Length: 70
Image 1 (cartoon, helix red, strand yellow):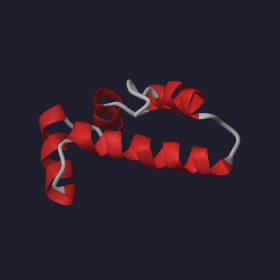
Image 2 (tube, rainbow, N blue to C red):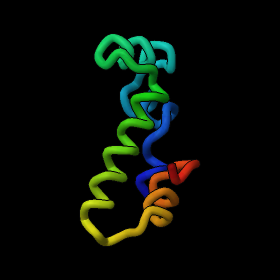
Image 3 (cartoon, rainbow, N blue to C red):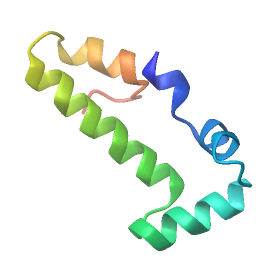
């Protein structure tokens, strides 16, 4: 599922980067930490799924690995 593919270790491995190099690159490009950036991606995906009308909020939160419905 989507939530299993988007975490710091997976991104770092896919880009052949260390965690610290990934953090510095993400921070330089976005001004956010790696965790903040991933959270923002999850929320954008949640928005897309909500707008599609196919899923309810609980399903989306579970599907994307969000810890809080808020």
